[in-house]
Every structure is written in structure tokens, then in C-alpha cells.
Image 1 (cartoon, rainbow, N blue to C red):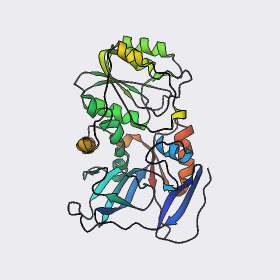
Image 2 (image 1 turned 90 degrees about the vertical axis):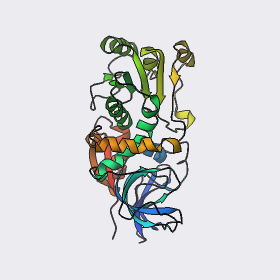
Image 3 (image 1 turned 135 degrees about the horizontal axis):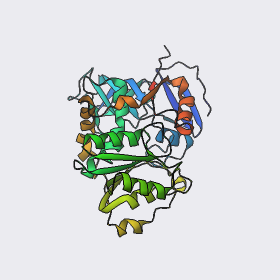
Image 4 (image 1 turned 120 degrees about the vertical axis):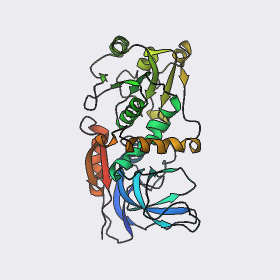
Length: 335
């Protein structure tokens, strides 16, 4: 990917995707808050291994399908400026969130009535808080909405950062968890690169038994046989449940080997969070579980970088998943 350093001095440093494949580190104007906005200073941000690369490649299909844009959306920051109508947020308060405005910049606007955010507990460091943004998908979309009961058996498909977060949240809920992935550098897993899908089905049934809940924590099916949905459907019990991340990738990049009749055959119930506003409490609950020591999110951090190292880090997250899990990004001031 192309990276250029613009010499014109402005207000803050940012990583901007000018167009698909072109990442630029440049000075841009520091944001000013509207009446119902406030500004945070970035304390730590983190790379979303899938979505940030999808945006850079130009295959994201959704709210980030626009150019130019500041890259990144996982962030923890300190409130440094308040809009005239914001009265329930304090200066100096640390918050963490998904941001549609881009995380890889020094200052970020926050819409008080927008997507929602979590207040970071005092005993959670800013690096860990930034990667806790993954609770949006890995807890709200997959675990909280599933209604897990203690002792239930859960299969996580995909042991990337989101899958590992979902697995830890399921364990915190009292579930017995098993995981399937293509790599072995993260947890003890059923390795799809070394075992056939049928071998994994038989192994799970022998080791664990029938599964109550399957969580699809993948963006794309990377298996050569494109059978990522086969295993969970086969190991789920009758009337079992399935949840998944909502990863917006353009249709031509999705594989289509899931037969919906198999879901009907076993009466599998598909669940997803009903509405974002109604589940923002689950987002905060994830941070609270980290604060209480129930979910060791900090163990996912493998690398720390500054903006000038982003091209290398994004390549690692895309092409060398066996060598990394989570990158923390620090915007570096040009002044």
C-alpha cells in the first residue's frame, strides 16, 4: 500500500485512506464540537483486523464505504471539549467506543446522541479499553443476545480477536467453550487447516457432545472447501441456537456454501441483537466484566505501533494471522 507524508502543517496527525489501496499519514484540521457533540483526545486505538483491511482494500459494504476517510474505529479517549448542550459528560472522563469518524487521529468528535459509548472503569488501562470496543460485536451481537445458561456448550467458529473475545465472554457466562479456526497460535482449537470438517464434527461430538450455541465469528470463509457453516450446523443439537458477527463485506467477496435447509432440518434458531440503542447497556457490561477480572482482554495485545507503522501492521493482520492478534495504535503528534 502507498503511504505518503504530507508536509503542510495543520492541526493534528491522522491516517487517511484517500482511495482503496492508498493510505496517507497527514496533518488535518482538528475537529470542533457541535452543540450535541464532545471531543476526545485519543489515548489508545486499535486495529480491527478484518474491517480496517476491508476499508483499505475497498471491499467494505456499509457505513465506511466512502473515501477519503480516517481509518480505524476502536478507540479510548479522554474528554477534552464539550458542546454547548452536553451536560452529562465530564471533562477528563475516559470513554471507549466505536467511532464512525476514524480512530487513527489525535482528536475525535463524539455524537452524544449517536452510536453509544462506555465509561472506562478506573482499573482498566486505556490500551485494554480500546480493544474492548470489540464487545460491540463479540458480546452484544453473539453472546448477550444468545441467552446463555450456565453449563451450556458453545462452539466459536473463528479464533480471531472477535472470536477470542466472544469465547472469553461465553466462559464468563459459565459456558463450556470449544473453538474452530485455521491457526493454532491463540488457544487449543480444532484446526481446520489440519482436520477435515467431518473429522472436526466427529471430534467435537466425542470430546464435548452436542452444542447448544454456535457463534460465527468470521468475516469471510477462508477454508478451501468453503464449509465454515457445515461444522456448527452438524454439531448443534435439535433446537440449538446460532449467532454471528455483522461484518459488512461486499457481496462478491462472500462465499455461499451454507444450505439453509440444514438450519430448518434441526430447527436451529438464529439470534442477533434487536436494536443497538436497546443493547448499549450490554456494551458497558462488557467493560465492567473486564474491570471485575472476568475477561482478560489485555492478553490479546501482541503489538504496539505509531501511525507510520500502519501499513506493516495492516499487512500483518491480513496476511500473517499466525504471528499477531491485536495491534494498539498511538497517533504521534507532529508538533
